[in-house]
Image 1 (cartoon, rainbow, N blue to C red):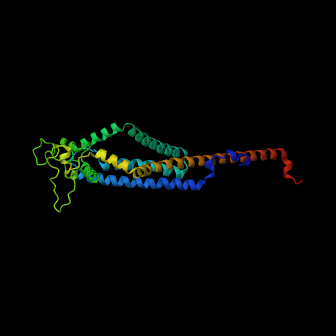
Image 2: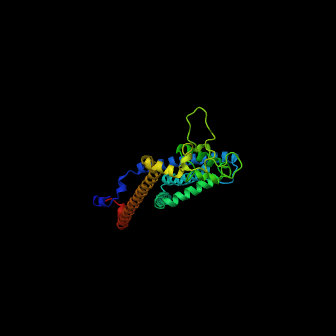
Length: 295
């Protein structure tokens, strides 16, 4: 390329082709293997879940979420691996657009959730209530709910009275758990003997009267407050989700541009070579038979 054309060289042309190729292949392969691992874990968890599942519902089933996430990661990353190995511009563009669309959807969803945060909280609370109805039938939800209630010191979705919609904890229920909350809602006592009955006969009481025994704050607000108090952790989680996708889009864009530059340079060189051959053919044709004799 001539010196006068240096200003027209795209910035991506300054990157090494092999460096970009190695980086993109490594990036795609890592997420391809990670997607395969997530998919395998999800399938294993779903097989185990089917053995003990008593509720015909996939509500908040971690296995289903892992399987869907693993399939998406595996297929998208496989397209990236294949495209980067074969320098296929169509596949490279498809890989870049898919990553960009996923990133845009996540950003849009996050912004919409913040703008309509009250509706988002109501949506989460409604889904938690749906899970509370089947608390003892869906072991996945039970384990998740118990973990959240113990870790964040909360009870229910909106508050502890959400447990009244469960058939075993409703005040009209005939069993011993009537009008109570699960033990995971209880404030852990420091005595040697654990009181597993601490949550019984609390739903129909006022908040202040049961506050010494159970957590009365809802888990939705508890988790939201925890994220606001630990904004550094929240920022790290967001960066861990969004930054790799953004880097993938940028890396793929640079690689596509570099491949296009190489293809353009190759076509220009072929044009110059074809022009030189045609010129030589014209000169040889003009020489006639005399070109065979020495001067």
